[in-house]
Length: 412
Image (cartoon, rainbow, N blue to C red):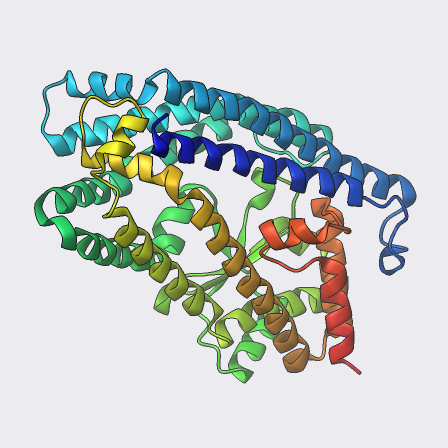
């Protein structure tokens, strides 16, 4: 057996086993006893329903992974990628355009295989637990808008990546890195005013005591506030959320309308202070730098494999090409991506503690922040007792009980 094929199969199987192991541990860690901290927040039936949501979604993820693994392996072994490449080459286009067609076919196939799972998750599971507000029209429009963005933004970038690797050989990874870095920064700057409004409506927070309190707090903290906005999150879901986005004059703090409807003014101020803490502590800048460094490392490593004939033989390819090499390298990079994700999640969880500390120190609203977190967990049906391995592998935020304990310790 081709050694690269063996490595790819091992990566796929080990990744599947890791996912199933984490999922099983998640199910076993569910404790029917309501944590003391949440007494009075949940009633017993509501907490049981929240745990059932975790069971259903976790088992569904196991089912999805169990279907996708054999499908992916069969597609590789039966020469599916070579079939797509033959089809793409049949149009007689240039290498770059052929690469775009090939990539589009791969993405279309991946989308079609994931679509039934997405539909079931959205319109059956989320609907069953009262979280879904997405209509069929909104779901379809989201797909079409995503495709449009992929074509308009992703297509030119991908074409340049193909072109750089074809023309500049060993130094191509550096040009690709610089290109992606520039595009990433530009997108982060323009996303609040161009991209995000394609999917949701953003409305400036209306004048009133809350808006005045936010403005006064921002001024006190030296935060160059460019706008606080409400987003129509209820258009798709009943979940609560708030986030910080953009740079420079496009910087925004955004509250879901669902969050504003279910939290008190002081709780909203505490959540705002947490989001502002991310800016004050330069968390967004730090994570952007880490992401760009990761991208540079990925391109440098990819340059070593992108034209490797052994790798192409593993996928049964008749022709060696930059565009297919990029897809195949993705399989080899999966375990590295997992390790990097674990490291970045560790950093992200530390950032959440720091933002909580900033919020408490700058507002004194420790109990209000705690109550806000509790309401978020209740509305989002969060798992209150995740297994430690699940946290290590997949949590960008600390478990809520750990955050609450940390906030209480700050106030002693």
